[in-house]
Amino acid sequence: MTKEFKVEHNLETGEVTEIELTAEEIAELSALRAETEAKIAVETQKATDKAALLAKLGITEDEAKLLLS
Amino acid sequence: MTKARDLANASTALSAVSATELGYLDGVTSAVQTQLDAKQAANANVSTTELGYLDGVTSAIQTQLDAKIPKTLTTTTGDIIYASGANTPARLGIGAASTYLTSDGTVPSWGTISAGGMTLIATTNMSGSSVTVSSIPDTYKHLMVVFKKVYYNSNDYPIQFRFNSDTGSNYYWQGFRAYNATVDPTGSNGTLFEPNIKTRNAADNYLNMFGSFNLYNYTTTTPKGYDSRFYWADSGGTRGHTQADGTYYNTSAISSITVIAAGQSFSGGTMYTYGVS
Image (cartoon, rainbow over all chains, first blue to last red; front, side, top):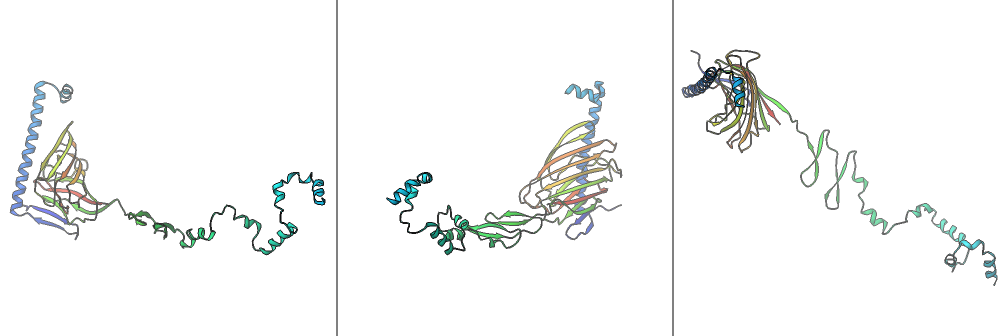
């Protein structure tokens, strides 16, 4: 399995370093990933619901916008 | 009676001479022209024209001359005369090429025009779960970070920013996202700045993320402003644009910026960090 790493570019020395993540950082990364996935899921569901509603009403998105304008 | 008779005989010729003017002859003891010529001879170095220059003089000439600024105060081409104090003329030599006249609030001086503009201070390839530019020089006014062709190992993930590795809820932003035929507001307060974008999981010249992020007055010990704009596309190829502006509510000067792949990893792209003077 590929190890997780982060990159640090020190502008004082010009040195670019790949630093392996610590267990704590990996946990934080997992939490961040889960949080983002949850947001993506909400957005995806919203888009799915929207499409379903439009289909139910038998109108296009442009027509829905026209109704609401 | 002889003089009276002579004057009477000359009455026609004397019609232009007034009695007052004739009175000026009172006391004359010899020929006036002879006397005048003699005076002229005594002042041979001063011409009548020069004497005429005294016309209008109202006080001692030397005193007036002493009160003037001597032209010897200027010694070199380009010299400027200014007052170093009340009634105290002083010389300011010409400044070096391309300098400008400025002031310390008391006297003028020449200032050096700073280079200005943008200086590329780092080019960083994007990989790993995050990319941090650290030990950012504090010699600039603002920072600008430009992103070119950024993509992830996974589809549809946003990008995130942190300063000085600060995980406090100090990031505030508002903006909008134009995507999939709609424009939606976006904004929050959180432990990082997260412009609402999506990314793709493969290199693509047309659909990878391009954008820029500006961080203003990053060395000040007051809250700092930032703004950003990104062009991107989702996994299905639908393009989007996100613009977001915000405040980093922390008084520490910023010396590092971390760009986070939202729990995924950067697979490619370049980050250019510029210092703005």
